[in-house]
Amino acid sequence: MPDVNQLHPWPDFLIVGTARSGTTALHEHLGKHPGIFVPLQKEPCYFTFAGEDPSFKDSRHRYTTTKQDYLQLGADCEDRLWGESSTPYLYFFDKSIANIRQQVPGYEAIRIIMVLRDPAERAYSQYMHNRRDLREPLSFEDAIAAEAQRMQENWHFDFFYVDKGFYFQQVQAYLQAFDKVHIILFEEFEKDPVAVVNGVLDFLELPDDVDLGMVKKKNQSGEMKHKWIKRLMSNRTNPVLNGLRRLMSRKARKQLRNYVKGLVLKHNLKKVDMDPATRKQLVELYRRDIEQLQKLIGRDLSAWLR
Image (cartoon, rainbow, N blue to C red):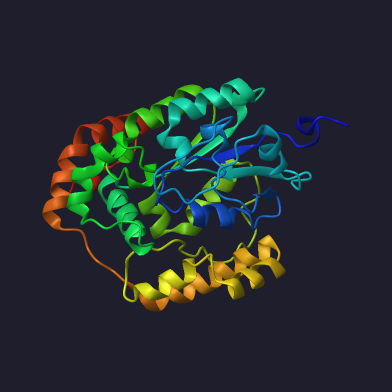
């Protein structure tokens, strides 16, 4: 039997993060292009957790940790470019890059796509996402104060709101390790998603004159108005719901879940703004890192410092 590595090559591109920056929308939109294949599973995180059995407090994610399973993600790519999206690749840059170097022949040629977001806004968005999913009991300010302790207690990295936002070393490491790195600013993606997607297609050397439809927002965050609805959606013990799930394909389950989630979030999500004083404190905390990043990538990040 041929080795799976000969049947299914390593990915042509990786969307490496950062979390809460529109990577899900980008991932799904690129998947509509006839020259691109992306697997149904987002966030396999293989290069971060290869060969490990990761376990975190309050973790709800399953990771792809074997080479066989990972390469199988690209089994249906045929003659298309294939890529995957795993936001931990940016935060755990040292570990992820080391695994890519060790396992992928000609790893320098992999095209790296990253989306960066104002770190203070990213932190708050991650917090509100956890509030939406009923995972975060603390106020934003108390959660920030608890972050160092949570890191020591092996909480999931989704709770490292502030620490994830120090991008300078993360980005620098990828620029040093790979020949082709494309950097997107979340704020530009929000303002003109079509232009940003076309820029990615140019980076991948694919035609950008293909109608991919509208770029829709994904994974919106906020406070749930009626928490019982979210609990019902997340219930994995209801025998009726479990029976329906077993009758459906994985793709159909995901499509139905996304449809229902979209309806619930549209009518059951309440936007709550960050305290301006807290934002001011975060801006000062990130100031030096932002200024270093600005010089590194040659982009105007002054809006992040306001």
